[in-house]
Length: 373
Image 1 (cartoon, one colour):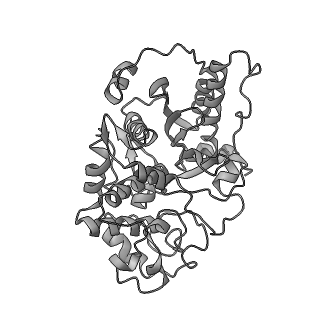
Image 2: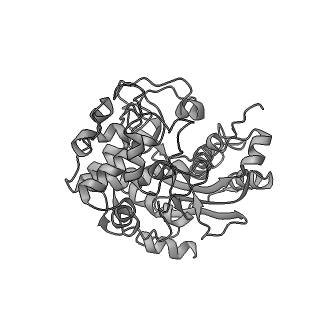
């Protein structure tokens, strides 16, 4: 599908931008990753002011390549639940035991917002000795979560993981009397034309489950449509998919006074030490002076990286899946390498707006994270 056609399908046609953008450095960065064997292929789309300014497919990918995006699906899951909250069938402050009375311990006191912001006190994942959470239904998944001991009391500690989101999804199913995939399709995928995006069936390979926290699969333009809606305050093709109130809530700090360990994702990726690092299903990577998130994202461990950058009115999606053996051999961490892309895009935008102001390539963008074997 051509760039012009995609734009016309998602926003009112506009006159071609007069600004010239040079994405050669961005292009080279992704191509280098592919050439190194870290990815067999990839796709990247960048949109500014609702116009595509860069799009390219790399390696053996096509625009229709379906990719499991791991934690990049957390954003989609939170948006689905936000749609149900918009309908008044749920409240962000509903406790778990309102809907799941079998949670009789402290886990039952965690609220829906805490489940989606990793401060619920739930364990991050199933214990090593337990069956991996690759169940095909949320009902079955939650039946194996209810008996796990809590790590902490709700609201005390930020622990990034996936099990708590399973409980949030099950609550949403009970509130609507619909299964999760049906809910996602009705509330998000179908209104946005995301025909190739699904949460079920659950992929049983390592790193993809739990369902809400790591089981989604999609294609390049599907997720770009989702970002279009989020960046336009819930509006898509003239229809309000999510309320502006829901968008604000998702992007608002949900961590509060919870303890955040050193070197969590935002500090690691951005060298940023602010405390309000997470909203509902999304990272708050950068904040303005008033504490409002200006760079938000939902990176996946395997390299998929969606972001919205309000400093340049851009959003983008990098779709890929890491070659684990090659990455491990060379010490390449896709989770911490993909976040270089919005920084590079910022530099492109600055150069285009102020030609000659940046004379030596990009500024603070040429950064990848490796580990020592």
